Image 1 (tube, rainbow over the protein chains, first blue to last red):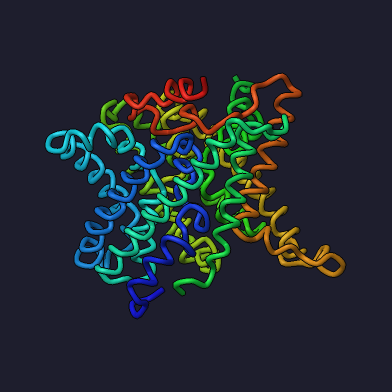
Image 2: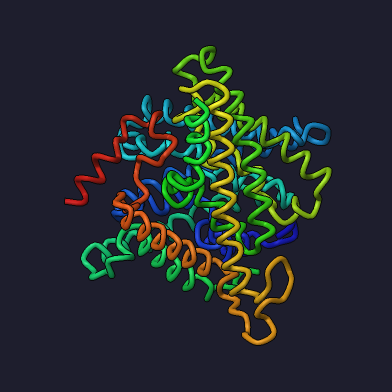
Length: 194
Length: 231
């Protein structure tokens, strides 16, 4: 993925072929932890997508105008602090101005600071040297991909509740093995979007 | 006293193995275990960060105000991760290439923040260092095991040396993401079975107990929610 890649293919790759959770293994904690019900999975992924896009928009100018070319080694430490600040800020903003959204998403926001998908997407943007627009598209695609994986998987898990599971696989093991099968289905997308 | 210190060290190795018992740090466990070498290097890099951050946080535990402790911990951890990142880039460029973005992502590895929050911020320096060492080696051991299984089944080799490659054709699926989830699921099942035999609670789900953000998101109280949804 470089600058010449078409925008549509970045979006498709983010959603399907390079799915954040199922092929890059980022954001596994919310994927396994908050996917018990379709509703909560949906709210969590909306919050993650929002933070991802805003974080990409904020970290891009910081990286390209402040850290480049001499201070790029500060990337990790600056990005994580910026993300922590953004999450805090979004929380305050929503609480003050858009109360219904805050009531729906607020509880997930503190969990997102330490979500590796958010730090991951900003790092991927700089590692692939994407320009501003492509960084945003990449973040949006990754967020939507995260949402798709979360929704599919929460549907699977609601079914698992009533399934007859072998004793030794009950709990986390069966969750991981179902995740393996969902991820297997995503392998079918390989090649789409370049 | 000496016994107690050994206890801090061995705790992380088996009894409270961070990956299999506490279910922390699942992202790197799945992502970088396609070969033994990558697993070991990720484990050791995280161990170094874990020991350093545990020591630093334990030293500063009386100075850091309670309200801003999580951002403070994250900053300290990010500092050590940057140091490790620069050292690896300078001396082991091949490792840097293999681990890619997962190296800087050690910052958000829940094991490190969880140990800072659960252990280092409440204990003195020596126990914290030993806890970091034990937890780090427990993490490394699990990654090595995962790496061995996946490399052996996926390529028929270990450390790039053919083992079964000449008479069993390798199953590439184990190198791909589904293989990672599957092997991890099986390892957790095995660890649960052993825990059960010893009369301990098997790991049922990845709940709030193992979440390092538990402290900051007291209002979510997902433990309670989880209980409600279970009923």
